[in-house]
Image (tube, rainbow, N blue to C red; front, side, top):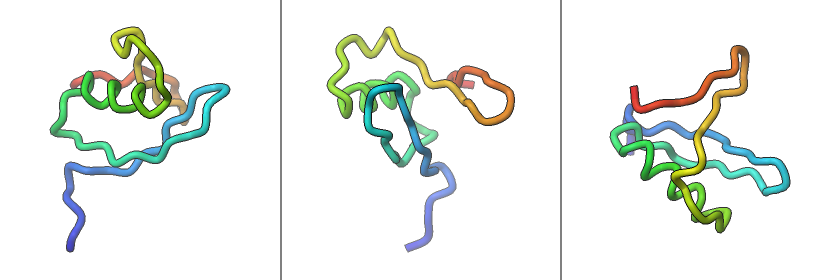
Length: 64
């Protein structure tokens, strides 16, 4: 089965937690992706978290 172009595998890490390798569906709202990541780490309040790109220039990931 060929891989869908809207789904990419990314590694997510947080200090003090085991890293996660997730399949990021780029069609899914970012808030839903962050909720899934928080659920994986048992973190309450996913609205208080963001994803940050850390390779090269550090910037936050947004819907756009």
